[in-house]
Length: 139
Image 1 (cartoon, helix red, strand yellow):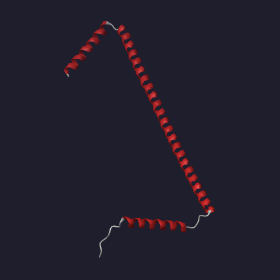
Image 2 (cartoon, rainbow, N blue to C red; image 1 turned 120 degrees about the vertical axis):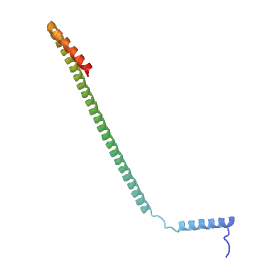
Image 3 (tube, rainbow, N blue to C red; image 1 turned 180 degrees about the vertical axis):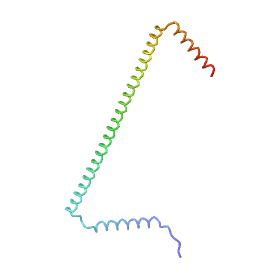
Image 4 (cartoon, one colour; image 1 turned 30 degrees about the vertical axis):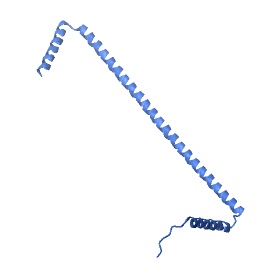
C-alpha cells in the first residue's frame, strides 16, 4: 500500500481548472429563465416585502401606542399621588392649626379662671401641685 502523496502545485492548479470548467458547464446547461416567470417572482418578492414592512409598521405603531398608554397611566398615577400628598398635607396642617387653636383657647380659659380664683383656691392649687410632686418623688 502506497503512502499518501501531497499534491504538487501543478496538480492543484489542474484540479482548480477542472472545477472551474465543470461549474461553467453546469451554469451553461441551465435552462434560460422566462421573463414572465422572472417578473412574477419579482412581483411576489415585492409584495412579500411590502407586507412585511406593513406588518413591522403596525407592530411599531402598536408598541408606541402601548408605551404612550403606559406613560399616561404612570402620569395619572403620579398626579393621584401628588394630589393625595397635597390633601394629606392640608389635613395635617388643619389638625396642627386646630391643635394650636385649642391650646390657645385652653390657655386663655385657664387664665380667665385664675383671675376669678380666690385666695383659698390658689392655696388649694398650690397644695395639689406640692402633693403631686411628693407622689412623683415617692415612686
